[in-house]
Image (tube, rainbow, N blue to C red; front, top):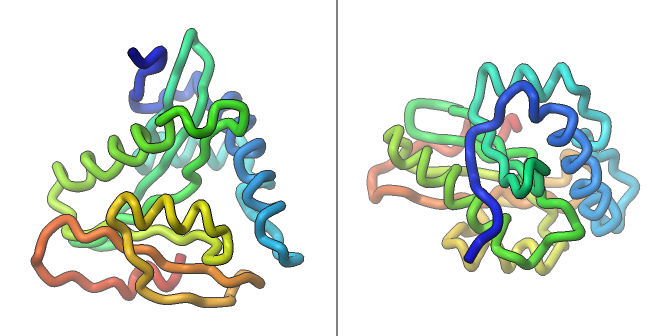
Length: 169
């Protein structure tokens, strides 16, 4: 039985979302094997508040503590984009990330999106395998952030969609 729940984030969650995001993305930054700057490590509480107000933010909560979070926004009528997805390093491999990802993807599907996109380090092998296991595929790779960054796509329908808005993220 799971000892956490997935729910939409609230303004009161902001300090813990910031702390968990920084811990999770510190691990990501270490895995880059490149001198790239990871913007999630510099995110402010104001930015998180704006995401909660404007976009879609889910958290995993246990005993009042935030264990992880995921955010998504609409890039077009057919394409959603997942970002700032992270789980506290002390509780990885417990299914929390999978449940957060499922909540975000299910929400996108319920809102009629045809596909979901996200970026991640293509050389972070365990993370790339994770997304493949969740039925995402690599659409393309870029070095615009100073490392090999893969654009992963998960198709939610067989209808056509335009992936080009994700290139700007």
